[in-house]
Amino acid sequence: DVQLQASGGGLVEAGGSLRLSCAVSGFNFDEIAIGWFRQVPGKERAGVACINNLDGKIYYADSVKGRFTISRDNAKNTVNLQMNSLKPEDTAVYYCAATSRILTTNWGRPEWYDYWGQGTQVTVSS
Image 1 (cartoon, helix red, strand yellow):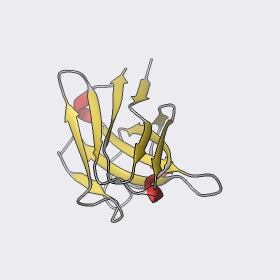
Image 2 (tube, rainbow, N blue to C red):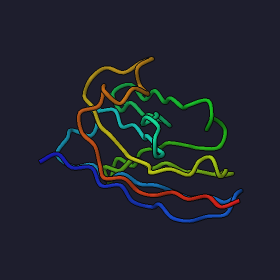
Image 3 (cartoon, rainbow, N blue to C red):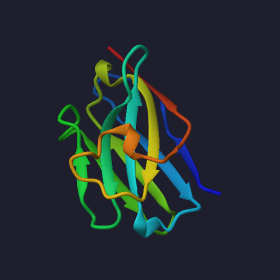
């Protein structure tokens, strides 16, 4: 079975850091792209970062460039999202998602992902 398990959310003060992890199973880890998305009530789910294990390309939303880093741990079949310099506007439920489709400029569009993990809440206090 395909499974994505997200973890690592929590409450942090503005300027702090959190590290999210997405454990992936049921895939050939080298042949998928993993994206992180976030969603706040009343808004659409938005792409935050993506790592394409097929070609190693990495994508970030402009709002997180320079603050967030996505990486993969091949030994653990895990994709991590290191979030630094957090801001209150980063508060959201964060989801990881996987796809075997080819992603380029469409990396941030949720409809291109086939499998989703459960969300993890990130709350940044001001």
